Structures are given as structure tokens and as C-alpha cells.
Image 1 (cartoon, rainbow, N blue to C red):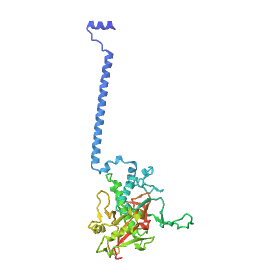
Image 2 (tube, rainbow, N blue to C red):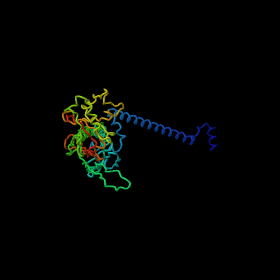
Image 3 (cartoon, rainbow, N blue to C red):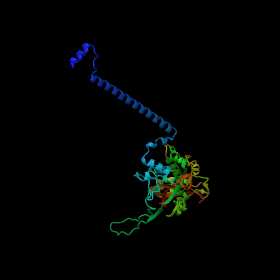
Image 4 (tube, rainbow, N blue to C red):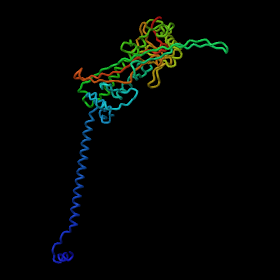
Length: 398
């Protein structure tokens, strides 16, 4: 080989190409092409990602703020939204629902469904609404009724000496008050086109409509409900002058003038009302009245010219009358002849609200085409549980 190479060099013939150099050159060219291909792929992928991001930005820019976060919703929220829009309850059937104060429930037939967040939203609105629920005793039950056992009499006792025989004393009497649960229902509707719009926050809309309906219906029933397919309001109980009060009725104090406070010493009626209530109840007592009555009461002054009414200095705290909180409940009657426009008492002991912890929603796309009806229902009841814990102010001469 060396001799042949030297001979070619000496004779002036061209030198033969080196195979190793050729392979090296070819390999370098191939690697260069591969690198160029990789760079081209990366560039195309980057351009594609930028294009997708731009399209998503344009899409979400025109949507409701809550719709933009739909992709991050919990599984039960997506499943509930699918059920409300199209009636598909398959997603909800397979979920293990979280147990909270007001959990959701799936009936045996699978027709009634609700997601926990919507139920909690509704319950939160009910609690924040100005109704007796804020100050009454609220219990959750899993039955058709709730029974309250009340010790309405005192235990007998007496002084004993060292050698004298003890005599039998009176035993307390237990009274049982049964509070049946009734069905409270609401039926808002929406068009199917509106439900199909992914930018529409159907859960918030539905929760708001149901909560508003339930809050207004409950508030009225707890005060003036007749007990027929609804809770029994405390103002429907038998009322007697406080001096003649007996268990099973509510005692009242008269203002001294028909349809108004007395012309002289008007505030005396409010003072009499406070001290008509037993001392054991006054520590947790509250006034209940509507806005019109509150407007008249807050002008009252004592003998020294000081207002009986004091507005709260802290956010969220109720105003106070003679040091006791005031609940403004618009379902209380206005001041009128023989009206019981003001109540005062320990409603935590005096009134009990019983409710089942489940809320149910039935989707009906057939009865009101092209709208979809949502039938929401819950079970709730209420009644007076301690007749000694509530007193009333009657706007009458006696």
C-alpha cells in the first residue's frame, strides 16, 4: 500500500480518497441534518403552543369569570353542572360525596341530586337571612318528626331535721312536644339554550334562586305559620295576659293604648316586657320586630332623656334595645290595634327548628318546554318548645 501510494505520488497521479474521512464527513452531514430537523420540530411545537394559548385567551376573555375556572372545578361540580344542563347524572352516581353539615343525597331511584357546594351555599344564605333561624334552636334529624322533652314543673323540696321523717315531695312532670317536618319546595326555571351556554354559572344561579325562596318562606312560617303543611309560628299560639300565664300559651304585656304606645311614659311598656320574662331566660334573650316597629321604638328615651336604642359599633353585630340584641324580622306584624308587634325572649330555648340534612333537586325538561324546571325541596319544621321563654307586647289598652 505504501509502495503504491509513493508510486502514485512520484508519477503525479491523483491520490485515492481516504474511506475513513469519507465516513466522517458523511456522518457529520447526517448529524447536521438531524439537528436541523430537531430545531425545526421544536420551532413548530412552540408555534403550535403559542397558537393554542392565544385561542384559549380569546375564548376565556369573553366568558364569565367563574367559567374560566371550570377546568379546575372539583369532580362533583363538573358532574352537577352536567346534570343541570343535560340531565346526565352518571357522574354524580359514581361520586363519594363528602359528608358535611348539609350533605347531598341521592335517592334510591337516582332522581334527586344536588352537589355539596350548592347545598352549603343555600344553607349559608338561610343562616344569614334575617329570620328566627338566627336565634332559635336548630337541629338536624333523620326522621319525620323531632320530639322535645320539656320539664315544665319544678321539683318539690323542703327543709328536714335530723330526727324528723321525710315526707314525699312532688315529682317533676315531663311534657313532650312533637315537631313534624314539612316539605319546603321551590321550582325555578331556565331555558335550555341558557343552560347550554358554557359561560353561564348555573350552580350559582340555582343556589341563589332556591335560597331566596326558602329564606322568605321559612321566615314567614316560623312567625305566623298555621302548622298546616308548614311549621307552626310562635304568634299562632294562644296568648294570655302575663298575670294569667299557664303552660301552653304565651304571656303578653299591654302597651296601655290601642294601636300605639301609651301617650305618657311610652317606654314603660318595653321595660315591663323585659321583666315579664323570667330571670333565667333574660341572659340570652332578644327582641324581635319589623323595621316599622323598630323605627318607632328607637325614638324612645328614658326618664333621663337617654335613648333606649343603641346601634352596634361593630360590623355584623345587631342593634340593642335596653342592652338586648334586636332581630329585624319583616314578617312580624306592624303596630296596630291588638297587634303583637314585638316579641322578647330566649328563642334558643323557646323555639326549635328541626330539619333534615339533605337537599334534593329534580330536573324536569318536559313540563315547561323550552324551559327546564328545577324542583328543589327540603324537609323542615318548627314549633314553640318552651312557652315560658317568650313574651309578647300587645298594642292594646289591656
